[in-house]
Image (cartoon, rainbow, N blue to C red; front, side, top):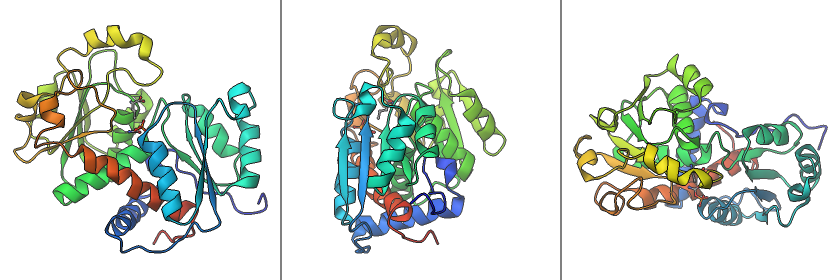
Length: 308
Ligand code: CP
Ligand code: NVA
């Protein structure tokens, strides 16, 4: 395997070109409708390393690999030597001898970069503290299904400048749509991710959620304390007061605006039950789209499906 050309990884949305992203959305849509029937992962295995909890990512990758004819292995820190301090580079070298792709969810984004640089098989980012690219591709697929296109749409982000916000910024950087983020002071997105996007797209960070959602076609939010930030819950609850997505905020968006949330959600904190369970919400389609878009990603990175 080490004599083959370097594998394509998916660590961040800009790893794919605009054309490649369009191919992925088309493929995902064909998978969703049942038009795609190839078992492109027959005889292939995906290792799934989870250093953090997961419902959607774990189940959608595992079921997705199986639906394409492949096999997925769930590896938690309690089960693998990585959890007892085996270097991530060694883990990458060893897993590359057994499997055809590695999905990883962990804390430091640099760990995923180290894993990828020592892996001879494709590595897929299933969430880090910095980014959650599979989720935002599923979100874009949802926008395309619900609104026809993401081109020319205004996307509003309300809340923490976290891994989801950073991935939305990366998506705006690559695809060029308008993105307005409302974050409390001290909870801005990653400065490097933001600076790069600003040179290519209309991405703004404001302090007022009303300003962000005005004219928006999509309103999205996420938990106030992400995985690994549980100790900050009380401090964050105070900082994010006023950043809850409620019915009156949604009414300031475009009349046909949709609401997205990557889930898990805390009703009564970052979003009201009236919004997430109401007519604006597309969160269940959004969750389903994780399956379709990740199958498309696995098909091109691991299954030989052409990008064009
Ligand atoms: N949205 C998302 O990634 O969910 P899980 O944490 O359940 O995987
Ligand atoms: N920002 C959240 C997303 C969970 C899917 C977290 O990192 O916990």
